[in-house]
Image 1: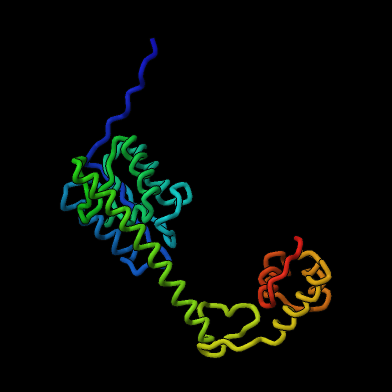
Image 2 (image 1 turned 90 degrees about the vertical axis):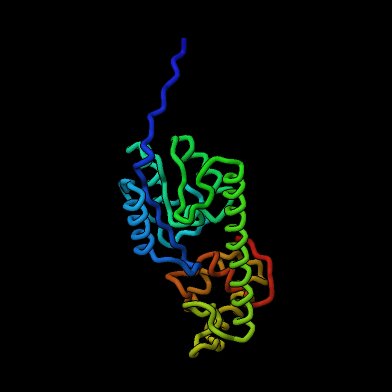
Length: 239
């Protein structure tokens, strides 16, 4: 008769903290998040064993690409902790599929996700619905932020203004505005001429180097040549 393996019981008074910040959100700093988690643990009589963090990581990033969250899940199992806690549920995920996967993993370990804002902590139908609604709303906000950011950048580019730390190839930053960089535009024109002969991206890159056209990076790669050709009219080349 096959014996079933008993799962290790978890302690609801042991907690693992999780902190996340991304590059494109106005958000609470890691230190403040950590402080809020420590205060929550003290007020609730919980033992906060460890706090793991992912910095500069989007809420839509897959779980296996978040070293901080992977470490938190490992600690959850090693210590038999019953709680994985963050200040807001959207610190865990801002994508409903990622949130559902995390919820499943934590539940399988007989633990639960807890947010300090109290979002759907229990298992009643109302709480389950609240969590699903919050995850969908967090995803909507993330996607809408991306749309607004793209629109703002497109507007700035249309006005000839700088939109990032580096000017696009073919331009140079002059204060807050972009001005043509003639040497780079000459490289783009030469690349277009070579493309018309049927030269591959690699061959174009080699020829540009031979003619002393200077790339932004260490060398002309296929992707940098492809971007260069976008300065001219679209052309089809083989790589």
